[in-house]
Image 1 (cartoon, rainbow, N blue to C red):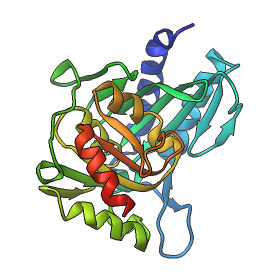
Image 2 (cartoon, rainbow, N blue to C red):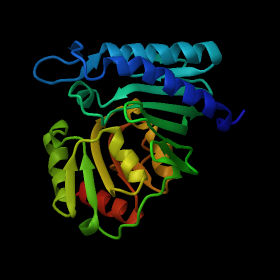
Image 3 (cartoon, rainbow, N blue to C red):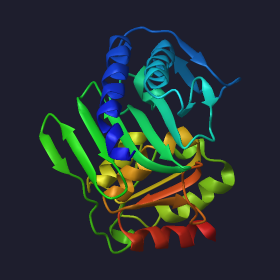
Length: 260
């Protein structure tokens, strides 16, 4: 059985999760904080309901598969096929009414991200990739995704969700890169990675990411011709400190500054 056999099912997962989430978007829903004190790690009923729907569908169709999800933990992580789910990546944007959040669905095969989708049901966009190719489908039709060339940091557009999410040391290293780029912008969460794959920006630097934050995005970025690793150049699927770039030259330059 190949990954291509699962694409129609993944589309159904995205449709079901979107139908579950959208009635909550831009409403006065209650928000819980998964952290204590002033740190905010929000979760909503929409997050939990969407993941529950996807888990139920996976268990009914593929009971032998594993599942890793942000809201309900892990099951059968050692299975040949493991689904990695983030029902709302960008919950802070979601609760703020900003449509730069998405549902992340990844299929891991023997521990490697084999296929990923980012679905934004409010706008009606889906970004998919299988490491060999990446595609867009949305209101403007369908097209292949391709990163753009960028020779140096001086020409690069850089995104991060927020430097305030970084510890003091990482923020200082990030600033070294930020000081070199043409333009630096904050926000975006999963959407930024899809815009990198679409050729609209060049570099993303983040920290403190979890496997469910990145697993679906790796096949999209790499399928569009980009590269996504940790700050020390290792595979990104476990999360942590992440660098994604459309051009290897920019990726290499960023890693050198982050390592200093």
